[in-house]
Structures are given as C-alpha cells and as structure tokens.
Image 1: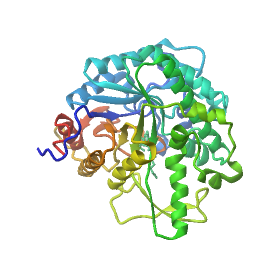
Image 2: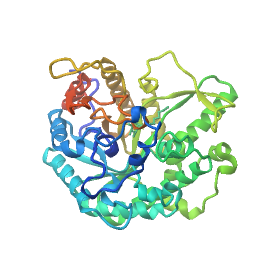
Image 3: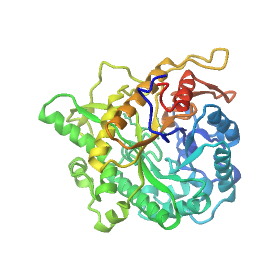
Length: 447
Ligand SMILES: N=[N+]=NCCCCNC(=O)[C@@H]1[C@H]2[C@H](O)[C@@H](O)[C@H](O)[C@@H](CO)[C@@H]12
C-alpha cells in the first residue's frame, strides 16, 4: 500500500441511502403515506411500475444491513428519516411506532461502532402536507421545523451530524418544473416558489436546532460543474445560467443571503421578489456543506432549451447507465470552487457513486463490477487531490450501500456497492465493496 493517497486522520468513511429507496413497509406501525407512495401508483411515472412497497425490505432487515456495514468496516452511515413515519399527517400527532423504528436503527448503528448521519428530508413529503400545497405553501417552514424539533429532542446526542434537506435542486427541478419526480408538477411559476419555501424550511430547521441541538447541522446539495462547450460569448453565458440554476441557487442564499442574479433572467416574470426577512432566516450559519457529486456538464447555448437556454454536449468519454459522464476532475474542481466561493467550509461528500450494468451474481460471495471499481478509485483520488489543495473535506459516503429504488427509474439502475436480489432480498457484496473496505481500513492507502 502506498502513502500517496493517505487521507487525514479521522476522515469519516461511510455509505449512504434514503428511506423511500430502501425501507419498504411504507405504511406499517402507524406511518402515513408519502408523495412517493402516491407517485409510484400514477401510471407511467415509474419504470416497470416499480414501487417502494418492499424495495430492500430494510425496515425489517436493518440489523442484517448494519452487520454488513460493520463487516465492511464502515465508520458511518448516512440515512434519511421518512417524515410520515414520525408525523403521519405531516404535523400534529406524533407516531410512536415511527420513532421506535429509528431508535432501533440508530442504536444498532451505535452498538456496531457506526456513526449515524441523519437527513431529515430526502424527497418523501407526507402526502397530507402535499394536500395542503406541500412545498408551495409558505407554512411548510413551520411544519418542517416542528418535525425537525421532534427528531432533535429524540435523537440529538446519539446523532451528531444532521442534514435538513437532500438536494433541494432536484426537489424543485424534478418535482415542480419538469415533473419527472413527485409530486409531478410542470410549472415554471411553481419552481421558484418551491425553491424559496425549501430554503425557508431549511433555515427554520437550523434555527430550531440552534435552540435544541448541541452538535452539527448542514445542507446537502448536488453540485455539477459546468464547462463551456466553446469560448463563444453565447456558450459562456449559457454556462453562467446553468451554474447559477444548479450550483449557486441554494448555496448563495445560505451563505450570502441572496439569489444569483441569473435566476431572474432565467425565470423572468415567474421570478418572485421575496421579503428581506426571509433571507435572514435562510442564512442561518450551517456547520458543514453536504456535497453530492456524480458528474459534470459540458454546456452550450441552446435557444430552444427551456428555461435555461443551455444544453449539455455529449463527450467522448465513459458514461454511466444513468447517462452521466465519468469525470472525476469535476469533483476536484468543484471542491476548489466551494473552498474559494464560500470560505472553505467543512464539506462531507454525502453521495458519490455510479450505476453500471452488473453481470448476474456468479457463485461465491463477490460480484465483479469493474466499472464501478474504476469510478470509485478515480473519485476518491480526486477528493485526495482537493484535500492536498487545502479543501476541508471531512468524509465520504458512498452512494449507495445497496442497490435500491432509483426513483422514476425504478430498480433498473443499480448504484449499490452491495448487490440486492429483489426476488430473494439476498445481499452480495460487489468487488467495489471489497475495495472500499480495504480503502476504509487503510484510510486511503489502498487506493
Ligand atoms: N443530468 N444530470 N446531472 C446529475 C444530477 C444528479 C441529480 N440526482 C442526484 O443527485 C441523485 C441523488 C439522490 O440523493 C439519490 O436519492 C439518488 O438515488 C442518486 C442517484 O440518482 C442521486
């Protein structure tokens, strides 16, 4: 093993999942339905009519899955809580059965020496709140803070790293602008409203944490660096719009208390003016940035591309099964961008991974996934390079521990370092899991 890729002492190595994608049992023990429980039943919205009714059956198999993490030597586990398990109507009545499940999960993690990283919202809004307008209703900031406070009071201390939202950009772009994700709206006037209410809810939850919590809380964003397809003024302007829309739209309000100027250019009459006090709420200081990295985009001007007038340009490169270019340099570049734009905040890579076709499980105990092994190795080396450039990266959560429900793509795309046979629920570590285990055990020296 070489010292070349040794990570800082205490670097936090783990894996990540989300509630709706792995748990199954969506309505047991008093839980209420989420918008995804409804959305998967909308004909044509999810590949093959797949649902999260069973998924990885993690709600029942969580002890085995924690044991698997321990056998791999993982030090941390990022998971999300299904809001509707805790508050079946989204607000008001607390459901003891929901709290009890996450008690069991958190205690099992701690008993196995694995640190829990808890995400309060990973896209599965209680359906009862969607019936009241969901992210379009300004009251959702209070509803979210109420839910967050229930969780802080029960878990803070056992949970020391909290995240408010997972990827608000995807919630808005997928759920309110393009309609590919729950709740499936397609409305350019709704998107900026949902964005603003997500940010207000984030701020309200951080404010509540400062009153009740004693540890760390952050925001998880997906960041995708944009590179101009040419040096033309048009393409460079397209990059600025795409970068503002995907990368600065959420972090600028949190760090600077204002939206990027390009957003009004993009949305025009659909871009509201918001009161100054909203930004005081949104810009509550956070303790870290959770950064989900998958790919980059080479971007050109495209007059027809609504609403950004920007479109990606295919590269002569390896692409994953989700159509994302494999570009590890983009991870280094974005970490340096975070360092320089936002004052080198502590960063956890809260998701990074790849979906590739996995050959059928051979006999024995390991499934070969050479493309995912290559992706993992190159992206960890990219993080190491950023750390050597002074970026304050504190941990890495591999997406994902298990093959799981890839939202509208159903079970057709496999991101897991552990294979799941969805007929038998058998877990089989892939070669990427074996490599990751060695990397974790050597703090990077096995890279
Ligand atoms: N074009 N393009 N660019 C890439 C944009 C990525 C946006 N999607 C994500 O980041 C989701 C995140 C989610 O948390 C998880 O729940 C999903 O399973 C993974 C995998 O899809 C990723």
